[in-house]
Amino acid sequence: MLFVFWHKPCTEHTQAVESKLHGELQTCVTYVQTDVPTIELLDLPGIQMYPPELYQQTTHLVNSYINAPDTLVLCVVDATIPSLDSSVAIKAVRDANKLPRTILALTKSDLIQDEESIVEQIFERVLGNSAETKDLAGLAGCVAVVNRVSQDHVTLIEAESAEQGLFSRLFADPAEAYAPPEVQRQLRSNTTTSQLIAQLDSLFHQHIVESWTPSALALIQRKLSKMQRSITRLGPAPESLDPTAVLKVLVSQVQLSLQSVSQPWLALVDACSALLNCMHVNLPVFALMHCITLCCAVLCCAVLCCAVLCCAVLCCAVLCCAVLCCAVLATLRGAVLSWLNTLEALQKTHARRIHCRHG
Figure 1 (cartoon, rainbow, N blue to C red):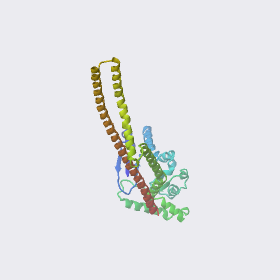
Figure 2: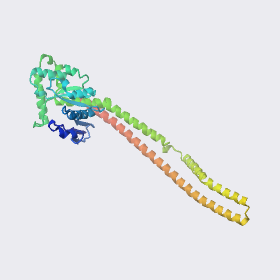
Figure 3: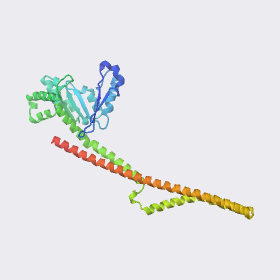
Figure 4: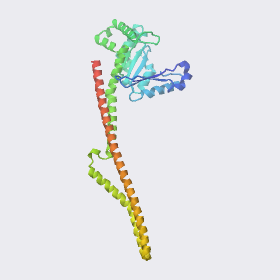
């Protein structure tokens, strides 16, 4: 699991962060465990409205991650704002068509005090009854949470208990419209940080099953097909070859090589003999020339033998390399198939865990 935290630029230090948005302020923390999913969590900076240059840079940075194909978005918005339509974060998500993969977290819900605002800005929003949430068609979820800052010197368990207590007090004496058990259940399932984590886990599981797994299996299948075509181009498998047929092919190739090498020298000997006959030389001169020709022929035969030996060694080396390559490719194919089986087993295991968790 990889966590990537992007420090939020402060408006008081605009000039200092303008050149640092794309890497110098990036901190990466790698967390490795055997029973966690492989995922990257990125805490992106808020979109700064001023100056215009910083607005363009922060908008480009946020959009570069939101528009990624496998991105799931946790959009954190201040619950105290009168209208969600004024949120630039929600606008960025809507423009990227990522609402079905986005969960809206309404933070600072504890700062809303009067009853009318609690109903309009918490109850109606998390139930999806407000006009502004109805405009967010397809939103994966909306959860209200309590504000927490670094100065709160409490543990996570204490903070969770306090958060549950606050929302329990809000639900203790509800208006008549929010008193039915079904409405109460919906309100409780869309409030507190623990419910937010549960909805994120459900969204992640849904994405794995419906999107990531099919695309990963298709990619593996394409790579397997490509590897199979490469193996097919190498020829038959070594275990399926007939040694006698392989030897015949090797001998025929050697014979062709010998013929191509010896034909020029035989033609030279015939040309020398014809030249001597045309010149009508006497017997001693002809014998001497014939001896020289024979010596040349013997020398050519020696060179020819060396060439044949080299060709034979080269052919054997090529055959050994081909057999070795086939063995390596067969091993790689087995490894890929084993990895595919492992992936399917992990998917089934994850599905069982999710079923047990929600069951």
